Image 1 (tube, rainbow, N blue to C red):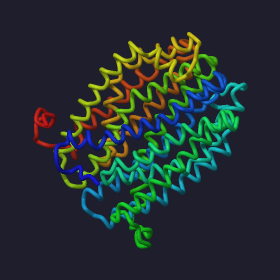
Image 2 (image 1 turned 90 degrees about the horizontal axis):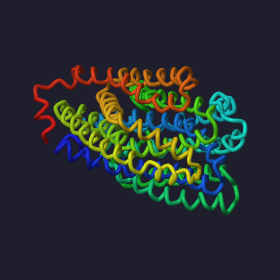
Image 3 (image 1 turned 90 degrees about the vertical axis):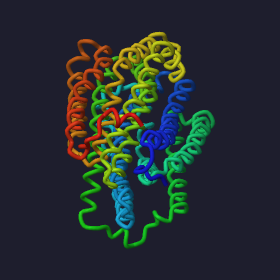
Image 4 (image 1 turned 180 degrees about the horizontal axis):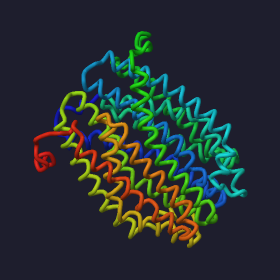
Length: 450
């Protein structure tokens, strides 16, 4: 366990964030392995089928991750305030609500899957493979939820290493199972999905058992499951706020994907590869955001607003340093990255994916601010501003998908996110500088000097 209310904010943020970063890299590796193996063994058509469904997968899984992170904010606040009995009640509520919501989403998404894929403009020649792949992934949603519930609870009390350990084991298993199902059992794209789900189940079980054995403070009695007045409402308020924030982001991406799916197989493959690289490039932003949600919540519970401001500035400086490295990478090795991920030999795919990266990375300093401030506001209890900012992203991407893409084709997709980033960061900046919970007489220079 790690108490984020004492010690150097800069050092604590780095120590807390690094295991999350490595863990998220391994989660991305799940998807990258599927992409690489599918592309190299089954061809561009199968890869396009997987890529065309990735936004739907990201939408649902993103909502679940946001939901559990929102629940964890309540746990972290009570941990920071040293209210351990109340914290255990929040953990019990998190488990109940998380599994219930995952089951509901599984049934709904599978029931309406064909309708959803047609709404995404899934090309008819990709429909069969795409349906097989995403159906299996959705059926394993409860396993993904259980792992993320356990991981978020552990992060709430400052332990970011345990989820990482089991995720590494799971990722190695996923590589082995990918080859076993695709090359050994000849199961096609469906096998890649089975490999991912089985690996997630293993990670969930291992993380839960270790958490139960290692931390007596997390042991739940029958009394903990009885809850307390207003707890369910508080958990849902925080969880749905984070979940909706993630969903609005993903809904916007789904809208863009529906437009991309009309531009041909080469463009679909290029965008799938470019988005995988983008996920890696932007990973430090989301990691710092997750870190700041826990950091701010613990320090709010401990009544230390000055530490929140210090941590916020230091996280932004780290993110901007990373932005500079990303721009250099996109202008030097972008083609290598696109080829490495998609295993394509088509020049048009490589050139299109590289163009996307070279334009969008120039404004990465904006989403860095968005991710850190948005999660920090969630950590101090602001449920409205982050959702409003994400709603701007949703509306902006839908408008671009409908109006700009038919005119500019793929260039409209490339320009979509930078335009939307600039619009959505405005309310976040205004709010973070005016929120009463961060009022302090300490000058900014002192806040960022440690």
